[in-house]
Amino acid sequence: MWRFLAEAAAVFVKDLRSEFRTKVALNALGLFAVTTLAAVSYTIGPYRIAEADRPFLLSALLWIVIFFAAMAGLDRSFVKEEDTHTAPLLRLSADPLVVWAGKLVFNLVLLAVLMAILVPLYIVLMGFHVSSPLALFAVLMAGGYTLGVTTTMVAAIIARAMTRGALFSVLSLPLLLPLMIFLIQGTRAAAEGSPDGVTQTLRAVISLGGVMTVVSVILFPVVWHE
Amino acid sequence: MSSRGGVHRVLPWVLFVWMAVVIWAAFLWAPAASGFVGQSSRIVFFHVPTAWVATLAFLGSCIASIRYLKTRQPIDDIRAQAASALGLTFAILATITGSIFARIMWGSYWNWDPRETSITFLLLIYAAYFALRGAIADPERRAAMAAVYAILAFVTVPFLVFIVPRIYWSLHPDTIINVQGKMKMSSRMLQVLFASLAGFTGLASWLYCIEVRLERLRRARQHEELI
Image 1 (cartoon, rainbow over the protein chains, first blue to last red):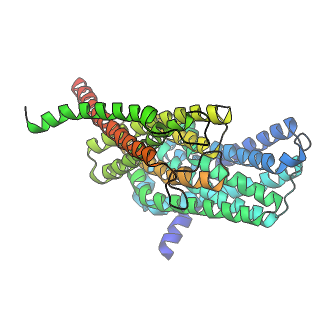
Image 2 (cartoon, rainbow over the protein chains, first blue to last red; image 1 turned 60 degrees about the vertical axis):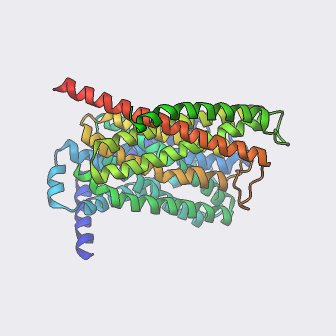
């Protein structure tokens, strides 16, 4: 177990070092998120939505920005290995599940950084009043994990295909749409201070994340060695 | 002519007669349900079976994909591809019939009701499956990646078909098997519905067999051209 964790940490640190050299994924995610937020804030702003519609519409816009920003950079960890021809060496030197865990943690860290910058900015710029910040934090954590685990698997698939960039969004977004619906409702419930709504969302999101984790653990070795 | 060949020739005709009787019974024998505009409730005899067949086909695609990953036999990839195509076709039919019902009952073809949303997502997921198949040139890699995606796609089906419509308020009429576990239909309506379910399942199985045979021929021809 400790060996598995140490090897996964080594893959994660390798990806992190490599990312800090080029900052491709960080720049793509961050700039996409900030640009989209600026566009949304400029066109809609904090006062153009009726008070009654604010919790739902602002929750929907927040998750649309997060999901589309995620599409801009979460495929990098696997695509980069194929582009730089380092994937065969990684296949020889590490167990598939170690690679999956390392890449998953890397994507989760990217998402955490994205959310840490984007969500406070969004709340300030859009005047989004959240009655229960702790509930919002729980929804963001659960949503971020499920988003990360699903996109990590899809990134591994598209790394072996042609036209990777477009394909990542085409394959990921339909799989993520049910998650987006759950998260929008959960964020709305957190904004309105409705614990029942948040609990219902967390149950659905965590079960989807759990199922995706189990399926990924079973199927990743197939994708990786294909 | 072998007895098996004879059965294969007779079965499509049995299916033809069965479906003709189902269509006649759906419009003329079963009563229209109360609480619905005009005769609109009769669409249940076509809408529910198409949705049932689509779900069944997606399950078939998932099973064939799992089999492919275990056996690596091209026939299992062909089966998964044929089942996904069939599921996509019947999901489109379920969307169209549901949309016609929505226009009559709620005054609009599309309302983004949770069930309409779910079926749209399912259509997008399986359309993406075919986009993935088109993006990988190597046949073995294509089959393996498509199999993995089909399994991932099927994981979302219970969330789309069962959880999303039940968590969020929906205009959609109560499902046939509801939370009380009771069937709220008259005896004649139930008979026609079950006959239609059997008929559509038979029709889908027949189309599936044809598609599998056609795809095998297509691949054999491609293989010959390469040689």
